[in-house]
Length: 476
Ligand SMILES: [Fe+2]
Ligand SMILES: [Fe+2]
Image (cartoon, rainbow, N blue to C red):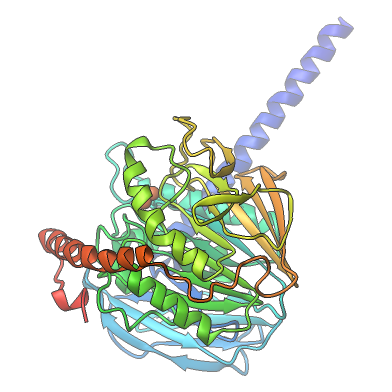
C-alpha cells in the first residue's frame, strides 16, 4: 500500500511538472505572438553598427513619407533627448525606408531610444556602449528567415521565433554581448517581409548588428534597402547589386565584412588595404563573409570551394587576418591555423601569436546540417561537430586576447572553447612586404572579369523576377 502511494505521488509530481513545463512553453509562445503582431516587429527596426563605437546606423520601414527621427537620451523617460533626423527613399517593394545615423555616443554609457516616422512611434529600447578593449559579440550564420514554405503557412513567424530564442539564449549565457555578427543568408528568398521578420525580436534592439550578404540575400533586391552599414566601398567599379564590402571598428578590432558573391578579388584586396590604412593601430583583423572555404562536406561544391580558396586565402595571408567567420555550408567547422593554404599550427585551446588564420563556420542557425559526414578536408579542419540544433558562437575580447566559445541552443556548457592571445599588433603574422605573387595577381584580375559576366546574369535574374533594377547598380 505504502509503495503504491509513493508511486502515485511520484506520478502526480511528474504530471504536475509536465503541466508546468507545457504552461511555460505556451506562455513563451503567447509572448511571441504579441511581439510578432506588434507594429514594432512589422516596422523592421534594426540598429546596424556605425563606423566605430560612437555611432549607430538605424533602419526601419514605414507606409508613408514624412519627417523621421531617432530620439535618444540617457534617461529612460527620454527626457533631455538628442534628436537625429535621417533620410527616406522608396523600397523596391513599394514601402518607405528610413535611415538615421546617430553620432557622438560616449563609451560605457546606457542609452534609451525610439524611432519616429509618419503614423509610427516605436517602443523605447535601450543599449549600452562599450569602452576600451573589452566587449563580447555573438556570431551566427544562415539564419534563413523563410517567407515561402509549402509545408508551413507560419514559416515567417516560426523562423523568426527560432532566431529570437537563440538571441535570447545567448544573452542569458553572456550578458555582455553587444554586437551580433551574421555571416549571410539572413533571408531565404531575399524578400522585405523576411528582413522585417529578421528584426522582430525586442532583444535584438539592444544589439548592434553587422550582416554579410549571402547568396540567398541576393535572390531578391530587398537587402539593398534593408541594410544601413558604414564605410561601404564606393570605389569598386564592379560589385553586387545589393551592396559590397564594408568595415567598422570596435575595441581593438577591425571588422571587414566582405561580399563573397562578388569574385572581384582585385577590388576586395584593394578595399582591405584601404580599410587597414585607415585603421593602422588595430590589434585584431576579423573578416566575415558568406561562402565557406574549408569544411568541404558537400562534395559537389568542392570545385567552387577550391576557386574561393584561391581568391580569399591569399587576401587573408597578405593582410594578416586573425579570424574569418563564414557560413553557406551549414556545417559546423573550425580550421587549424592556416597560411598559404596549409596547416601551420594545430588548433589548440590556448594559442599565442598564431602564424596564420583560423576560418570557422557556425553551422546554420535556421537549417543546421548533420546528415552527411564525408570527412573531407581533414588536412585543414581542426574541429568539427555534427548537430541538428541551432548553434551560435560568442567572441569575448579582452586586452590582447579573444576567447571563442560555441553553444547549442538551450545548452549552457560550450561545445568548444579556444583563446588566442597576441603580444603585438602583428602577432605571429609574417610581415607581408611585397607579397602578391604573379599567380595571385592573375587570379585577382580573372576574378574581376568573371564578376562582370556574373553581374549580367544577376541583372537578368532580378529583371525576370520583376525587380526594377538598372545595370548601373552593378557597375560604376
Ligand atoms: Fe544558407
Ligand atoms: Fe548560402
